Image 1 (cartoon, helix red, strand yellow):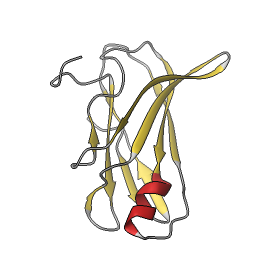
Image 2 (tube, one colour):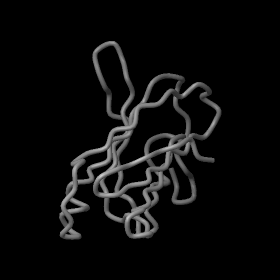
Image 3 (cartoon, rainbow, N blue to C red):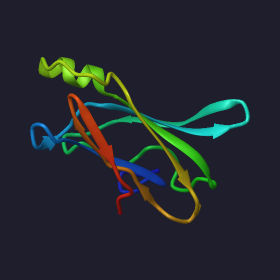
Image 4 (cartoon, helix red, strand yellow):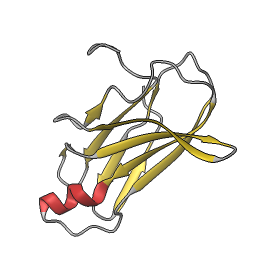
Length: 116
């Protein structure tokens, strides 16, 4: 995959308590299977809070999850937080589509949605 290619699943993390992108968060993508979860890709959010390359450009239909390691992010900021990790499980229903799964994050809450 070259620098301009994106993966089938991308994400963007916004620190909604500060109104800025959340840079430096480790993110893992896994696929559900009969024997548990299988790693697909991992990355770290860039200065804009984005991960554009997180696994292959196409993935088979199935259930996936993103895991965001949020504890280290808030520790770097010197901020107490409730969620040391955020996991978002979602269904990839069309292997030809791109799935963008943003995370809006604060020390004591988070939300997500299907982005474009």
